[in-house]
Length: 343
Image (tube, rainbow, N blue to C red; front, side, top):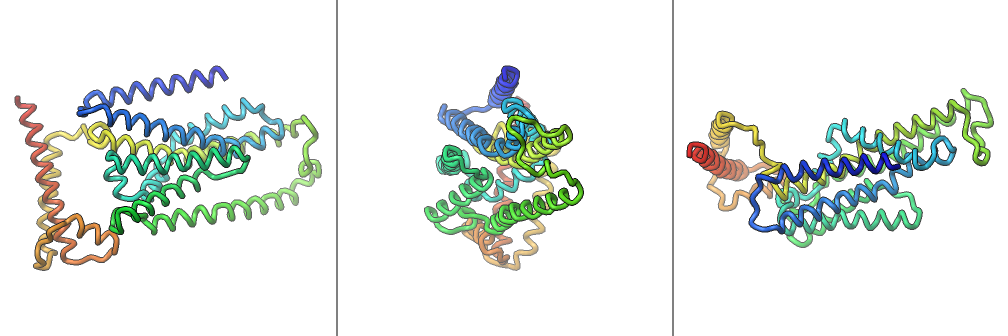
């Protein structure tokens, strides 16, 4: 246990040190963004901590019940394999969760509205997890978090009206909902089928009875239980671990974009290439406008397309106008950097 606490302490010191190094070059007019960043990160980590109340119990229940591992060793073993699963994960699940979030939250997560939505979805998930844990009810943190995300999207849409960025992406929500609905059914069917096959192949009645009190199972069952605990923990880390990872990156990118959202390795030549390609793309878009009149509010036009998925000539004009504005801003930023370097 002391070794485990030492590893946690070293990890916390490593994360804090690198966070402070990343924030060294960030200039903020007040301390409020840093305070909000710290609170948001603590709440996100708190959700991951509470998540362990439920999901770690799912992974270690069999090895503890059968005395294959002691409780302390089982929890440390499961935590280690969860961590390994997170390290080698692809990040696909994290992006899947972010796609459920309202676009307004992703774009303006550093604003007061964005922080309110982040705090609301995380605190709601934490309260539910703590309540079900206190009552001894098995609960899925994934279902809880996804429900909180959809709830935040719906309330944001009610408060600010229906547009292309305020609500929930229901196509993505339907895709996630199908996986949440069918995964327990698939698990139930496969588990029953495997048990049936095992009874046909391994005809040892003692294996299918309740174990004697304080007696460990046979050695090969002992090893199999530890293997399944390891596999469940690893799979949980590579899947559920990405949810918190995605939310933490969303908080970091939205709060201090100059530290995490900008590619600082881009040189002047690559910037000019980007500007040249962008100018060419703007010229191509011009050919598809169909002679439509300019739009007064390109953002609203693009939001209407996102909501209705209906492409119109004014949509192309809005995209062209919006991209042209971004090109000009990028060009001014590149020139100012060159001037600072020259001076």
